[in-house]
Image (cartoon, rainbow, N blue to C red):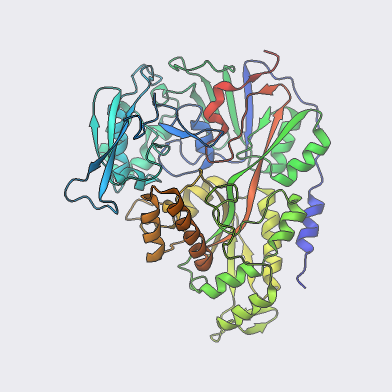
Length: 562
């Protein structure tokens, strides 16, 4: 039987820190602690959650999913549908490469009072520029596919425009990925050198420029790697937020983050990027009289991306063996009290498209050993497998440094894989480097452990379609960091997006989950539950369970006694 020494060690390490008296919090200020610092503040470059958390207080996408998982307008005034006339099916122009025979024209109206913080109205010109930027092959935007699909934009007036999309997708009313940037600030920077735009954007060179933000808050101070300070935006048209100032502090070590909460250095811990579940469970037992701890299960998928360019991992048998060798149920029960259930694929059981018949990989070290033997790693020396050429079966796993939960899981994986003859080395990096460089540029040698957040029925084009493999040629756009390429998956994704019939789509989702499980481009670990640690006096924070952060509704937050 495999050794569980790392699990025993993990359980011992879950003991709490000594408490310190908290500080009184002024009604006009709120300090939030989280474990990551944004690599960039540009809303369209890279997809780091820390950035989205901060920017959601300063701007909003056109639409998003709310706490009830329904699509709603955030910057627009009405959600366009075919039924209300806001969306119209139309023929595609000559020369448009599309899996659909028809396209769709979707019309949005920007809120009439939406204004950038320097007084410049948010207009259709910002939409057109953001689209032009996103379509440019060298701009380096994370979700370039969303911009590529829009083959034209018709400007009706300063606040109304029509997106002409090259296919009729089932989620056509949603434009959650469209975050506008100010044309009057960013165009000159972009046109000067598109290839250098990602490093010269004003969001990073001049982040306190009020003209970059139109939401309830704007950024007024930045201490790189440490904290971001926001204050009320006088041009915000919505409900006035309760706090004059919000400070977001980055404390990458989760134990230090807990200590900062208890000392009063921070008032709350962001559930999106805060304590690990094991820490939160222990924390609640000790300090539940002083803090509310909310646990929100959702569409948060902890997994290991595999670099399929690595010749060892290119062998499907090795990938299957690695998953069979992990006792994920023990990890879930012994580290997380069962609150983070085993993931058998990238689709959550909470999502209506989940297929319970998806192939599974139970803990089976004997099967793992058989597969590794079959793959040519049968010569065991000093407990490590070697191939016929004498090369050791050695792989490196990386994750975010300072995240105690992930580091404990790494130790468990290292031990369990060693039991079947796989030698594992661990190398971790600060989140900003790990996500901003290593993962984005596919510079991890073998395995990268992190989480994906998704929206309900989110088609995994950016992570699984072969067109989404980041490269220098496409400005490191796309999120298929594995380098996964399967024409069958590409075709399935293309067809799935344009299937409007719900029953047919469900069958296609089942096939996608089967193919994903067979190919195994990543190793599924577990579905995360986010723990939100809030002071008793804070009200209005409503976790969503999807990639929309709580800060999208920060104006609803308030003191209970105010």
